Image (cartoon, rainbow, N blue to C red; front, side, top):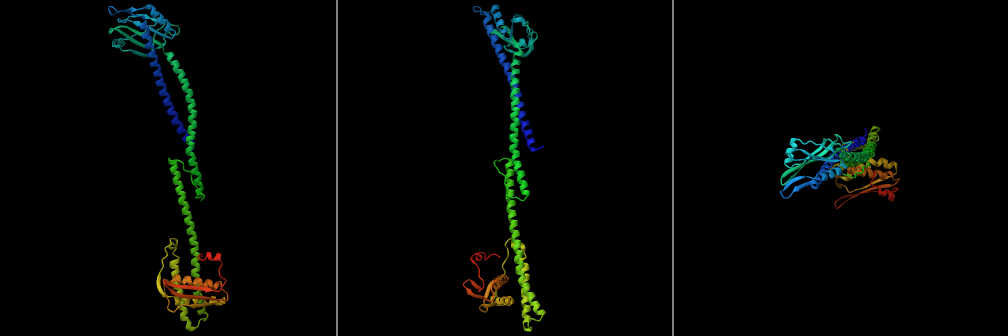
Length: 424
């Protein structure tokens, strides 16, 4: 079963249960109220008929009797309202009864009456000569009356329970209609409440599918502070983290790609030099007096290649920008002379001439391999874009180090190309 329907059933059950409890409580309270109102009305009738019919001897302060005509008039009047009464004297003898009304008073009730208590009976079977009321259920009030602290009479007055129940029946019908309308309203309210929750969950479900497809830019709107909104906030935080992670992965992949290209480019140069020297040695193209120098060049390039492999292939250092510089003092003139020898063959093929103008014994404090890498690349690029020209390398000491200049008379660079000079 879908969550929407489960939530609707849950909300509907709660609302209907609450309405049922309130309805039952309302019926009970209303029923009790109707009976109390009926008893109060019967007490009023009883007090009124006693006041109309009683006769006192005011001289001797004695109760004389009840005037029969007044009792009959009240009996006829109350009979139209389905109200009947009977009067008892202190000896428990019934002295008057309207319409054959014949209630019975128990001994325990007489004891309560003598103490001045009024007795209320909700539904009793009382006899009456009125057609349609024989042995009908009636609600009764038995009320004692005193004169100078002496009980003079007891009045039992009652009316049909059906009169009270008729009003209750109409109330129940009205309540049933209201309950039906409320049930329809409860269904609508349950749907609205359930939909307000499942709508947010549907948004999360759709967004989750987008994330599964690789769309990390998706977000879920958050408008409240309930648990589903908290989940939506957590989801948005997750997509933000995934998006940043994806961007970082792409950056790392680009770094890796560039790193591999750069590493291949850097290692190709010493390998080419070593290969050329080996070919020269193999075919006796190198004079005997230069062989030892060629071997030294190969050793230096081999050591440089090893350092490149150990350093540049450390991808984790590349990724975290933690490459360290191994600075030391060395003679840059000797280094540049070696570079000239390594690149002389390529320069000759292009018809170029490499000129080194560096003071003898010029000391430099730098990373040896980085210095060789940078100068080699710049001179090599100068050769590549210069035909039958000259490449001049100069160096001089400045206030905080050394300045190196590589110039050529090749094709040069445009302003747009110059903007990208630091790109590989």
